[in-house]
Length: 176
Ligand SMILES: [Zn+2]
Image (cartoon, rainbow, N blue to C red):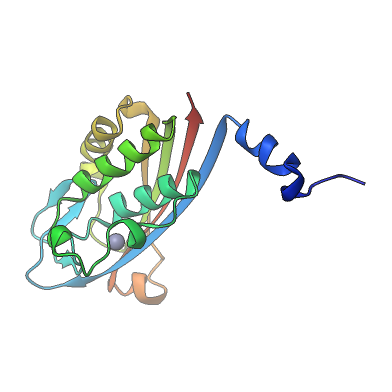
């Protein structure tokens, strides 16, 4: 029988020596009038923006959530409460920078980021490389470690009806 009692120290001891950890992130925002659309720090003009307390950069938010998940530090709601005026219309790249600082303070660095933007519109292909560069610069890695992919919902459901945008992200971190 495998001994796996946290109180004995066995479980935590092996956990602490794991060098690689992975986190998953998800976020969704609905479209709103009179808002800028910002994804991965790139402003996409001539399209409705997203509702939210900060700049509603749903891509940065999902990536931040995945980073926090990798180090088991809760979610972005815990670190950036939407009741805090400090984050009103905040640049989400600055919030991302703060999460990266937390990861580094815990002795980790980011290995890679993968993300999928789920949106019927806009088409983000022309902006993807700028999004990758923006996030890579803040994270402190080369752009080839930050992936941004796009898909639609084939017109199914709320996202398919162009009611908003959702993003899935996975982040791997490594203990230095
Ligand atoms: Zn969000």
